[in-house]
Length: 489
Image (cartoon, rainbow, N blue to C red):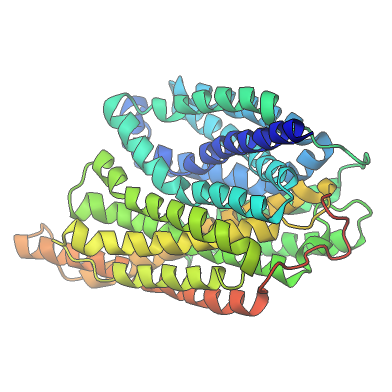
């Protein structure tokens, strides 16, 4: 008997390793291509304006199809969804790696997003139904959350290394390696979920949700490339809001809803989703503006800039795997997530002190460490609390909500913070003249840093608001998230 238990336990932890690889692959793909874009542009000869579409294509398909992907993982089962997602993601990545034209490359990125939208909720749902014991669950989610929170930084590092030592194409080919390993691991260690009942897919809900999320993500992305005053930007955002409101109203009357509304009526689950949403807004200030600062102001190479983010990854891992894993099962999410929000806010404030000639160890490193410690306290408890206590048949839908909150938050953060930085920089650079003299060039650098500083202050404000909201919504101790829902056991 004990031997059987030991084997089962070993299989669970090996499944965690497999699911973490899948999470890493999907998470880093949002940033790994960024560093490779100039090299891809040089090879394929597409315009600077088209470069943004390689990022937008992935975000649009991924963000708009997450809720559908989550429900499909409930209907098909976890293993089937993971197999289909991994095969599709590997095929799309290989297509992008051999692309000889911009149209092929952007199509491959869109396909990556489609299959990523199936993979992300299926992996989180599989983790949710694999670990039921509170202590094991806290430890597993701390590891999984640390990897998810570090994905953007790891993507920058890996993208810089592959681009510098091999080719930009390996930023896509590397996914094939990840997918093959994950496919073998899924077959060996990930248990298939029982489908307790066959229910039809909510087609109307799918169309409303996918359309609403598409227009929301597109609107935020359009704001980055144009402006917030652009009519098309606001038209897309308004269309997205209208469709999402209609989606919620439809879910209240649908017999087989795409996302059962009972999943978000619990205050702890709602607080966890709020935490993930606001954190995803703020985290872009680190991955975007700090990368710009290291390369554009301090003159770091892409690889060196990626290496510079390693302390952030280490701090996230330390905070998530030690503090979150040991404290979550005993004290619940309330003491951890607001504390993490406050630490992340302090990290953003530290980044407002960046100077044109600042030293890495005195100016950049402290902010990275403090921010990383905060993010580790946010992601792991929020992921665990947002998916706890749901029916196995709803695990995919709950996981999709988690990924959707992060994706919409990230899209909003990229659009809002980037617009703030660009607008402030433009105002500060007026009157510098052209061509730039040496002093004018220095003034332009200072203006750019001023734009980053204001954006970091806004990011700090988002974390501060997050601390207040999560303190009010979350609960201490091991919360009861069942909501009259059948437990996972």
